Image (cartoon, rainbow, N blue to C red; front, side):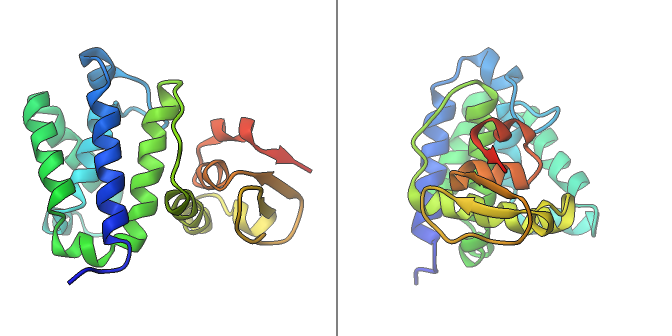
Length: 192
């Protein structure tokens, strides 16, 4: 049985793996990302770690601590073993991941962009992933910075405007990143 967005999640995981395979060992282990203090290796550990929901339970509501534990686990693994694990999880996501694919696609797309943008690169973001990143930003903004409550967000590449207040215009991907606190994405946005 296929769940909504399951195929899109798998495809984005394989695109992330392709991005990571193109990095030097130095970039993979120590490269800059938009996730403060995390390298691409650490981001991958977090993304894969989401397949193991039970490893989050001991942390209760301390999600950041649980995410860091996943990154720390990845840090201790040889690169090739970590990449094998990532390929396996891309092909065979856990049941909880498959059930939550609609939500996790936004997290995955955001973290893929964290790596790409952090290293000063670009990529073509698929339409469904751009929408998921925007949706992720809308949700995170309610919790992190409330930008969604203070601005009218106008996607210039499809989608409907959201909110009230001073306009912020730009691609869904950049809007979503900015909403989730990645302030460097503001360079791709127009503020009224």
